[in-house]
View 1: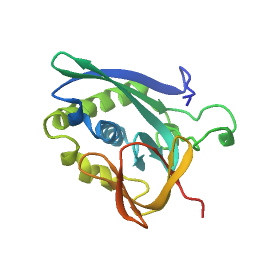
View 2: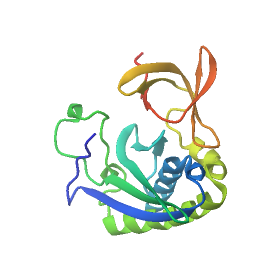
View 3: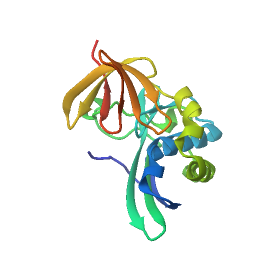
Length: 199
């Protein structure tokens, strides 16, 4: 996957964060980061931000941002490099050329100030990641669920680009797993690409 960005039209940055304990403690980290970004954008005055499992940030249904996390084992735990990209302006090109319709903060912030956006998102990340490091995703789940764009909506789960499951999206479990109500009952998934089912 590619992320199209430009110096004047986007804000992209990485944050290094050290966690103690085993890798299992980091389950749901991308969801926690998404929540932190949403809270930070709220503080900037950007309303209508919602989240898509596991790492997309949406505005009015369009993709305004994304998250990519890389983990590395270190002596006393795990080092996470958290990459975040946000559209300040709509990217150039035909919207149909994008896998997901793009959105931009300029739709709700007439002149997005990249320094203010960065400062607010970093403040929010610090608060959320401090909580996450102690208590995991469970303490953040309710807030994430309240911002979940596709709660109780029909979706299909693509795994490796191929159709895997379809059902009703119930959001995330306490450990960040996707909950999907299928013909077999409620199933849990830790990876995949959730796409809305075509009506």
